[in-house]
Every structure is written in C-alpha cells, then in structure tokens.
Length: 253
Image 1 (cartoon, rainbow, N blue to C red):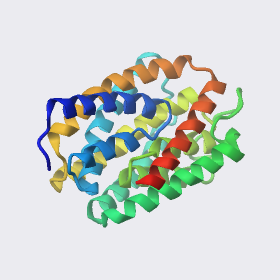
Image 2: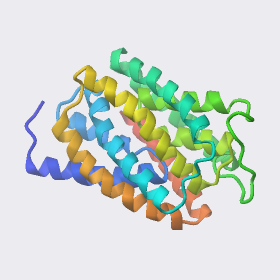
Image 3: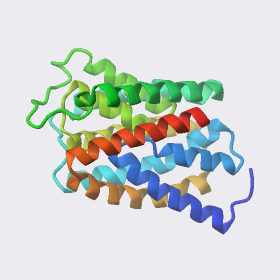
Image 4: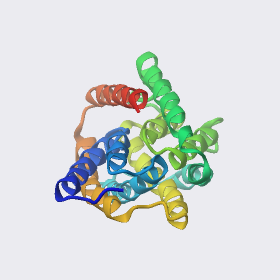
C-alpha cells in the first residue's frame, strides 16, 4: 500500500464527513469511502474492514445525538437488536473469509432492489403520518428482515442504511426520524461485531481508518440535526436520489 500524504489524509477526513451525513440520513456513504481506500492500494477485503472504523465511530456519535434529542425509541430495542446482531455476526464471518469477488454482486443486487422499491412503492420505506408502530414479536417477517439487514451489513456495509430503512420502516412502520435513529443503533451493533472479527484477522489499516473516523463523527453530528428538521417529502427525494447514486456506484465498481 502507498504512503499516506497530507493531501490524501485530508481527503479521507472530508470523505468521512460527507459519508457520515449521507449514512445518517439514508445510506450509501461507504460507496465514497471504500473506493477512496482502494485508491491507496488496499485490496477490497482490507478496504471493507478499514471502512468499519469510520462507520463505528459515526454510528456511536449519531446514536448519542439522537438519544440526547429524545428521538431514539427504545421500547422494542432488544427485539430489534437480537436478529440484527446475529445477522451481523454471520455476515462478518462471511466477509472475513469469503472471496472479495462476492462483494460487488451483493451490493449491486441490493441497491437495484432498493431502487425499485423506492420507485414503485415508496410508502413501504416512508410510512404515512400516524401509521401505528409494530413490535418485532407481533410482526411476521420482521425478525428475518432485520437478520438479513444485519447479515448484509456485516458482509458488505455499503448501502446497509437502505436495507435497515426498509426493514424498520417497511415491516415495523417507524416514521423516518425514528427509523434513522434505530438504523444508527443497529449499524453500531453489527459493525462492532464485524469490526472485532476484522481486527482479529488483522485486516484493518488503522491510520486511514482513524482519519475516516474523524470526519465521520462530525458528519454524523451534522446528519442528526438535518434528519430532525428535514421534511418527509424532502427526505423521500433524498433517499431516492441516494439510492440511484448507490446503484450507479455498484455498477461502476
């Protein structure tokens, strides 16, 4: 891998900031950061692992921000986290040992599916105001949806925000602010599991990972404040545009 220059280090901080905002509001920020890490000379599996350092820190920052503003629903948090963590562990194991060539097809299929959902049935992703919230125990399919979201996040990470939004808003019917808050907590949970596996297998490049983390934490702080104030209509268009960008990024990788 190449030596990190001051310019490249600043680029990682800036990209981390942008990714932190995007991941807090929607998903797909890793489509910026993972290619940037690969430009430095990292193979895909190491870039995927190193990227988790920034994701971990932005998720921790975002979760604390949502909680401090009273926007993090905790009534069914245990029910949500159990399948997500189990899926994250399984996905992290696969990512740590599977051929890197599996990453692109998984990313592309997921992003195309999410784009189709946003285009043809957006109400699944952003429920109407006043829609009753459900619990995991009373919702058939919610456990599996959260497990698959965790699995995908542990395996690929890039675009997992979209998958979690579909699971949380689509099956449990949380509004978009609550969905984003819970999405951040779920991401924190399975990223911690996956990152531990990557550290154990010595797949993390710490200097670029920490540079991403610095920007990501600032981006997450900004993202939470935007998420609370943005209108549902603007949020729907932002999600749709970010999904299209993620699809294009997956195709070009």
